[in-house]
Length: 177
Image (cartoon, rainbow, N blue to C red; front, side, top):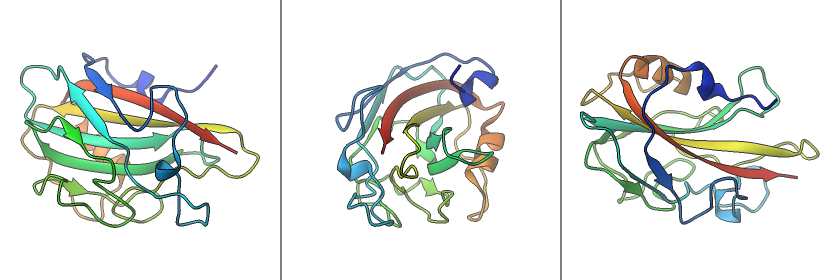
């Protein structure tokens, strides 16, 4: 049985999330692999597009989580929140290790990932650890903005979204050594 961290959350309507960077269940490409640890990757957020968010959506949060990391808490690769309700996509590379590109919504905020960087850190399972799942999730929220401190964790973001998530879309990429 494979652990699904989203199975424990209250059920909400799903909507569609796709990517031109990878297919659901497909392998992540080199741009989405960690470069900061010498693997030659690009640490580039993949392109993401979503549609069909539920009526009443007032903002979005976007996260990337690896439940297969060899820790008791998985590994958060990316967390952004307060994306405007009219946002329907993010370009590949809209966020990298420590910066957001001009195409990233100015109203949105980035949290530090589990690597300690406010940005996207690519996949980097330990050698010999096998394939890991990288769950990219867009959360439709019923509030215009969440109030979080810049030092908040992605886990705290999840707690703050509880009770405000009215829809969720997910696509999963795979990578391993």
